[in-house]
Length: 384
Image 1 (cartoon, one colour):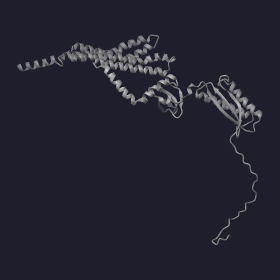
Image 2 (cartoon, rainbow, N blue to C red):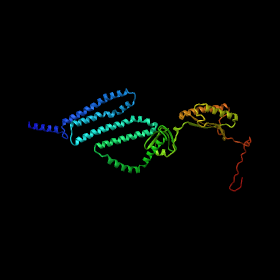
Image 3 (cartoon, helix red, strand yellow):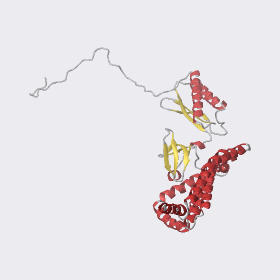
Image 4 (cartoon, helix red, strand yellow):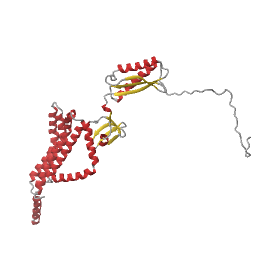
């Protein structure tokens, strides 16, 4: 029996000393507290968050609904932080274990705070969109990205500071490292500055149709820190470095106030002067009376007999449509083409096309052509 007593003493010693001087019973109790808060987390997500959503849904604005929806993941982390805190408080560790437990709780709190700030930037960007009246959409996007990066950096510095890691030497070292990197990453900074110039000068914006001769033509999808994504009309994306867009002439078709139609209409040379007047006046009256075209006082409008070409008498049509939409512009051009075709035909004229006249002074006789064989020389050198 003394042997069993000694064994029980050993078991009791292990139970009481446990790990780091904390008995196993306390550790099991602390684990139970932590599990209880995990269960509370599920109840918190199911009841508390549902109650908050119902409260915000009764408000007149939708911003609070979006905020609750955005902050839900960080808020669900709160019961987990509380579980770690109360479990550590119950264990009452000492020495290094106590410091690690405190730092762990502080780290979880910092993560919750900065995670919430990072998540809240998404609905905040919609509030910052009101600044588009002063700044461009791209500049607001850059501002939001810069704030996100700042939040991440400050959050990382906070966590490092909690664990006793000095941030100042790291920043100083990063500064020296940054100087070394800057020498080899000049193109990166050039593109960054070029992107700022593009946004500041408002050369183009997202959704604009641009043409950079010899580089790309398409629709701007995004303007990044280093490059701009342009979607070509065949739907292929092109990543263009910002320097190629700031140092080169960029044609922004979306900036057009109206869209031009410039045609040369050639009629045949047998068209009389009266017919030319009828055709010219008919085209001009249509352009001036149709509401799809810009008035002459607002944009240059000409319908004139222009020149005598090799095969036609040319009529110049120069006008602008009010719409800049490509599809609507094509439809207006189609209707104009129908009217010109009808006007020319009603005037009794026709459209000219390249032709060539061949003049023959005399025709060969009607009889068969006499065949004269060539002379043949033999080896003797005499002609037969």
